[in-house]
Amino acid sequence: MNLNSGPWLVPDNPRTVSDFLVLARVYAPGAVLILALLRLLDYRLRLSILDSPLTLLALYGTVSLVAGTASPDPRYATYWSIAFLATVVTYRLVGTAPVPERVARLLLLGTWFATLVVAAGAAAYGKTSIFGSSQSGYDINLELNEMSRSSGVARWAAVGALVLLLRAFYVRWWPIRGVLLAGFGMGLFIVYRMQSRGAVFGCFAALLFIAALQPRLRTSALVLLPITLLLMVGSDTAQILPEKVIVYLERGQTESGLYTMGGRTEYYAQGWEAFLQAPLLGRGQWADRLLLIGHIHNSFLEAALSAGVIGFVPYVLSWIAGWLLFFRLWRQRDSLWRHDRIALLECGATMAFFTVRAIPETTTAGYAPDLLIMAAVYAYLSALAAAKPGGRLPVRSGIAWRRKAQPAVIHA
Image (tube, rainbow, N blue to C red; front, top):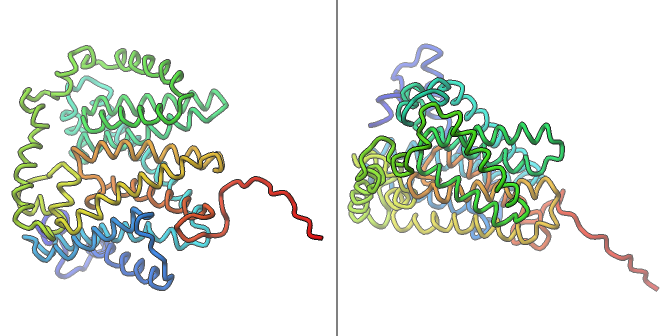
């Protein structure tokens, strides 16, 4: 597996427009990374490590880049390390904007919009199977021509559904609220039909998280969820839902396949053995595939394989820093503008979803759509924290926090 094979074929003598487009696609991440680093050096950004999940991910990515020299295919590992770092560093650049929180808001909204567009596109492309009689998520993958796996489609639908649900609760006009709730139900149905267990449990965790933070939403949820389930039962022509939950979770596999998480536990054992062979630095990005283990399906083991113990530490800290940022802002939510309070809750629900999904998938441990979504969330949280007076991140102008009027002081 290398850059001169498969979809990453690099033309030796580019002649056509298509050849040059391939070259641009392959080398663009490197150019983006260089430009982003130059901007950071010029800006002299004060990096507050514990307040910046993106900075911690950049440290992890740098270690994995160095570790790629010991990869079975250093060129391939280096490419994916650069793609990872280009993403993280570019999102970190939000902090260098004149008004970071404004840029972060637009970036987050753009991410939500892109997520909904991709989910809608996948649903439209695979509509015959998703809304038809396919018996499993694997059948739906076939109609999608393997453009995305069941877990991939379910991820887009899940994040989009959570955002639509939270937006619906804060919309006062019922026609719009109804449209948003219908979109939420549709997204939930797609997650269910794709049979991605990581997405199913991630959605469940995110909904519990929302209910825990917003008690006033619990009553609405108690009414909404049964209605959604009834609609799913009525529209599911494959009649999967009435079957036992264990049959649904098996996805047509054997019971032993369920208990081994679809063979993931075997990958975990092989991955652990590979980690012990290079425990300090690891083997660089995509080490699981290049070592012929296969997709490791666990974010933390993937990080350990890619960057060893040295890189694993900042990777784990990136999750902790992200949650610390969220709860610090949540405690001070009353001083936020209304749209920021909504966006903050959306970020929390998304983080809850991906925290659970990180167990059976590889969220933020490598370059993937998960990283693009979570990086936008981290950039938003960091920018919002930076705008708060007294915060440990650099304070900027254009503060998006409401301040109580201070009494005038009259000097004699």
